[in-house]
Image (cartoon, rainbow over all chains, first blue to last red):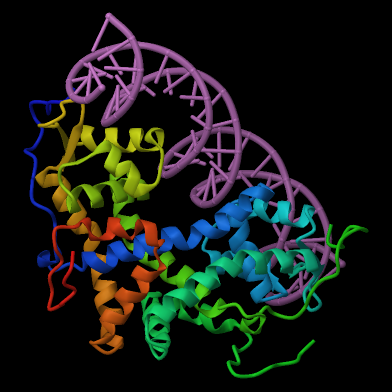
Length: 177
Length: 177
DNA sequence: GAATTATGTCAGTACTATTGACGCAATTTC
DNA sequence: GAAATTGCGTCAATAGTACTGACATAATTC
């Protein structure tokens, strides 16, 4: 089984490199960075019997309280059926509540509970710590570059989703409770 | 079903923001960026009946021809059993060949075939195009910032994996590996 | 010869995702 | 007001990726 079967191609012994005109360096860095970026919350989630899908739902419901199921599906780019089980579990465990839409009573507006907010924060905390550490390694003003780059990596037609968030008033100490 | 059950918590109507001391802006950008970054190759892979796991294996076998199964498991951070099916399919479809290790005949060195190399390039091409476009939006010298940031996002103890690659010499003085 | 190592494989399970179909209630359209 | 559409929930069937634990084989090391 170790030998190639008769029809098999010959082994190529040289590594693919950026000379092929392709940016393997960043492709690979992006893979490693995202792998470790998600590993922090994954560990916490395991304690709850939740997975990465629960995290994403929880995140967006906290970021855009009151969004409807349809809007959530659109942001996550998954199907209704994929969302169903995950959302049900989050509701059953009292992390998220549904309210009937005020304008359209068919809609279900999704809101986090205090419990759901706390979990969202707990999951984001190690990720934020990792980001802060990475930015400290870089120069301070490079933060803007990183944000621009990441935003430019998103499909243009979907970039609107990013800016839905209320407004991330940077310097401000805020008060809208 | 629309009302919360008696014991349910009250809905929180305000969005989580960066004021909570957490960098939601970049957390979310990273999610969107990676989602779209992987969507390009996913479409191509579907034509072959392959998934993202096949892509990762193919990528690393092309990047480090001759790596052993154990090394591959270590880079991917998955289990032997998870790799088994994917690797078998790639071998059966003549994208990858195994050679008996020269020093240690128990080992299987993995190499891409011409077919495997071609597919790896085809998968990387749209990703590289996306990266190039994103970098064009930014300044040229910001490339180094991006690389530094992504590298700093990786767990320090795993950062060694990144530099295993032969040498990604650009203009970079990056000297010491 | 015995222990260890590298790999492959088996069985069972879990999570996330898919497509397609159907039902119900609310809204919109005519 | 009846009909069509929309938003949501749910059912059934399936797939891809991952896990743990166990066991077999061959090669290497002690």
